Image (cartoon, rainbow, N blue to C red):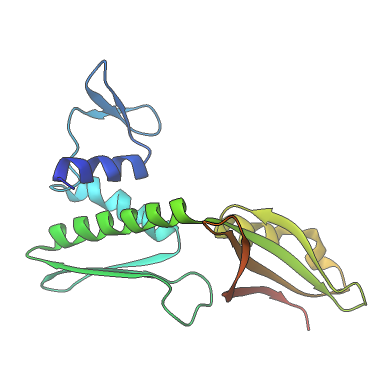
Length: 187
């Protein structure tokens, strides 16, 4: 992909909209941001992208004295790295920019391939077993819901956890056995 295409990829990830009739870009709040995209030349443009990636439970590391950038999936209590991108370029800005581009490309491939969702489930001490109480499209929403759930205050609740499920490219529903996040442990 060309630099212009990579900038458009980042812009789309950030919710930036291009108006053909005006030949201008607007951010996701409808504010004018210019006629050109400067993710590849400006930390002011690139750092909000890094912050958005970090808000998705990724750790974004920009190397010391050389141009190295690394993105690692650090969501919840995972002990293994689920996704890692590491790039080296002459400058930190170039490395960060290229790591962002690779991350978004991988994310796009994943979204095309699979549809994910997270289920908040409750395990009871009595014989009711485990019950799924809510399905959320993002991990952060599932965690927020689990933590705010009134069921957490019920004496019969042992555990509240979040499971990751997805529908693969064949349309089959599959549980991600590597992913289980304990939110509340009342035992």
